[in-house]
Length: 384
Image (cartoon, rainbow, N blue to C red; front, side):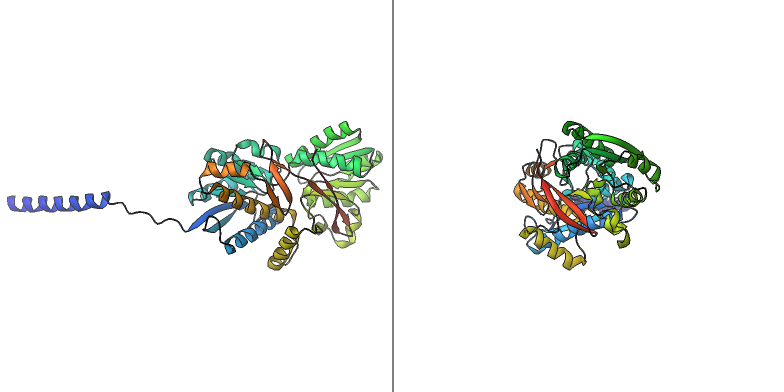
């Protein structure tokens, strides 16, 4: 019995020794051969038309970047997850990307899920660029959050100047979506600038998200006979409102923000008359002859067999700006990347930009005029 105990004790010590030796031996982990950048966007659901076109632009850029050597000598592993346009889904997707080891984040497309992610990303100090989130307070979430697009209030100011200085309007009316932060942000800034410019706001009517019949509000607007009607909403609603505006006899020139991009697609060609000679602010024009724009258009059309939207161009620029920042930082250290983004002096498809003290871009706005269902270049309005 004593001999058996001694043998077992010896075996136990041997096993312990072997285990201890294994624990103290540390293998040097192989350095990752890829650099991970993540993105979220609504790839399904009612906002998918924005999310898919935005994602297409970013993917095209990442493919070009990898073809030309990647970032810091590494190939980019670019992962896009579906946020479905929902804030909770967006946060879940973002957290999954963080768990997978992303060093930077590009997204989301709509403002609400973008803001939700921004508030979490700020806690992580994750370098974040939203291509298309226009809601003003997104970049207030943290010093790590930036945007490529201009803000809702910025567009409101530009649209008031368009009405007064470019269209020669004296009277304006507004039909606002009371359920939308985007619509409200454009409207408030428009009213403030319109008052400063001496424009007379003769009517302001509202509606709720999901409404389909605007004839009652538009009839009231028509009675005031405005020179210009501002419709600060996305293209689906703008298409419905425009058609019904003409039905009730409203002859005002229609104007709107960048959410109008796609309005012609929402109408049958037989209904193009409703939006004829309307204007909306946007980030670039397909008619821009610059080499950078035309090169982008050629590559995008070859890959996707369609024209890129402004969301495509903004996301393409966001990817390249992030690449430039990481390379200027010389590492994937978060604070270094954030500092490099802040100091960006960037020429993109959507124009030249620098960032202001709130991480919003200072850039010119392109105005497009709708002629026969086509978005034609009208003018460029520079920021004051």
